[in-house]
Image 1 (tube, rainbow, N blue to C red):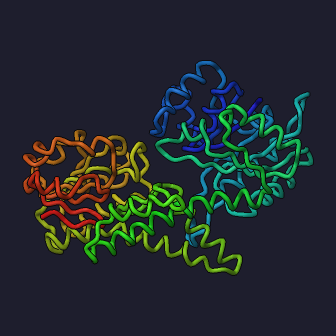
Image 2 (image 1 turned 60 degrees about the horizontal axis):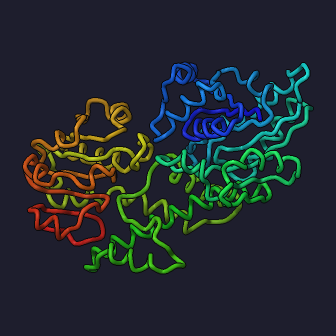
Image 3 (image 1 turned 120 degrees about the vertical axis):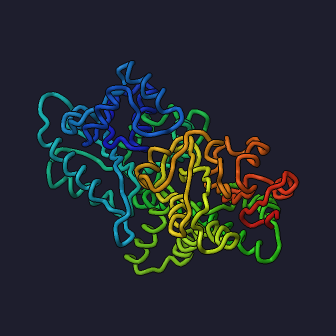
Length: 443
C-alpha cells in the first residue's frame, strides 16, 4: 500500500518507519528542509531507541523516503497520515493550525492530481486532536476539491522511549470510521501488528478522538494522585512505597503509574490534560478532577527544591548542585515540560551553581539553559565538588552507581532523589543524608 506520513516528529517518523518495515511504500513529508536533508543523509533528528536502525534499514530497501514535496507525496498515496504537532495555545487548547494547514494542502494536492492514478484518498488524523477535528479537516479538504476521500481518526498511543515497540506491539488499535470500505483498508494496513490477538477497536470518529484524551488524562490522574498520597505520607510518617505496593496488589487498581516522583512532563500529558479541560469548558462542563490533576502536577515539580531550601536555607549562593537526569523521562532526549527545568531554574534563582548530566538530553539542555549551567559528559565527573546530588530522571544507569565513588566525589554526602531510586535505610548505612519523595529522610 502506498502511504504518506506528513510530519516527521516522534509520531510521524515512528509511524512511517514501522509501516515501511512491514512492506508498505512510505514517504514521509516535512516542511523543515534541514530535517529532511538530515534524514536523507541517514541522520535521525530525535533520540528514540530502535528508530535509527529501523529508518536506515527501510531507507536502504527503498521502502521509506523523505521529501518536502507534499503535493507529490499525497498524489501518489492512498493513505495519508496527518502527524504534525498540536501544541498548547495560550488558552490551554490544542493549537490546530498545522493540522488545518496540512488539510488544506492535501485538498489542493488532490484537486491538482491528474493522470491515471486513483483520485480516492484516505486521510488519517494521527495527531492528538480534540473532538470535532475530523469534521473540520473534512470541511477544509472539501473546500479545495470534489475528489472522493474519507477522514479517519486513528489516535496514537506511543510512549517516548518505547515508541517503536508500542507501534509494533500495540495494546489496541483504535479506528474511528463508519465506512466499511475505509475500515477494511485500515485493517489491512494494521494487520501485521495485531497478529498476536491484540484488538483493532472500531468506533465512531468522535469516540475515537475522545479515547486518546481520556487515556492520557487517566494516566496523568494516577500519577498526580500518587504524588499527593506521597506528600501526605511524609506528613503522617507513612512510607509511600509500602502504600503503593499495598494498593497496587488490588487487581482493580494494578501497579502501573503508581510510582511517586516530581511530576510528569513531556509533549503529551501536560498539554492533553489542559486541552481536555478546555474542551470541557467549551462544552459547558467543568472537568474538576482533570483540572486538579494539572494543578497537583505543577506543584509537585517544586517539591524537591522545597526540600533543598529547607535543608540549606533560601539563599544558595556559593553552593553547587550536581543534577542527574534532564529529560522528562528515561530513554528520550525530550525536555518539554520536564520537571528538571523547574528544579534547575529555581536552584539558579536561589543563587546556586548547577552542573548537570543526562545520557541523551544534553543538547536540549544547552538550548534551554545556554551557559547558565555546566553540562558534563560523564555521570561521576558532575559530582566533583558538589554540595549535593539532585536526581530528576530515573535513567537505569543511575540505579546502581558506585556509592563509594559518589560519596568520595561529593563535598557533602547528600542526595535529593526525585525518583525514589534508592532505599533510605541502605543510604543511611552507606553514610548518606538522603531525601526522597513520600518516605522518611535518612539523616
